[in-house]
Length: 253
Image (cartoon, rainbow, N blue to C red; front, side):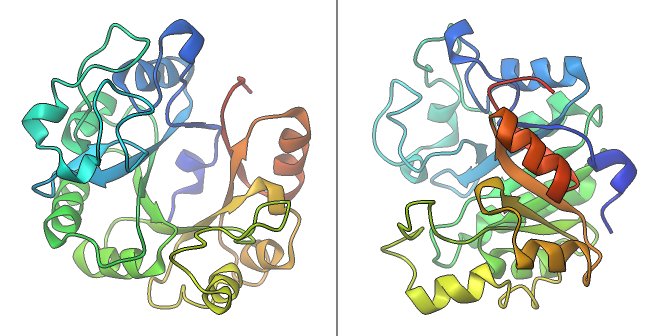
């Protein structure tokens, strides 16, 4: 199960980043800044061309780096040399790099990104092997229950979770409009696909709280509930009232 005593604390979303100060999300300076304050760390994992897990959120490289195209086409050696925009910093971390940097000092929530297709077997196996040999507090999570069901098979000893919410933005626009049907979105929002993953925790969109599903997670299921991404005073109050820990960004608790 998830160790509540270790994990239920403020979690810095993609590290304690600040673009105005040249501290880029999902980079070593952002993670070191979070560690210095004793915050937990949330990060994102995507596969390089050979399946190596890289610590990066976007599918495309252009927003954060001087590169272009898909991260899935990037070789690890090139990722290590790629400059970030607005920072005197070069190199996308591998998951192995991140684990070595954190070294058990704070809890780590690693989100396995999904495009709602079968993930690279090499990517999944590499994550599982690194996670199983890591000695610090680490949990894996994904929006895609199929990803976590596979991780349940590959790394049964590692706490796993589902990232979820209403599957619609506040204006009613659906999440993943090209990848998911309305029926599938409804099933995911109602955590109907989570059974095979057997999650130890959930992370719920703060914009959808309070919700009957979130109440069921904490009450009937008795599982810890993180909430993302907490950015405002209103979000903070919502997180305090309806979740167990906030995944925060843009301020310090």
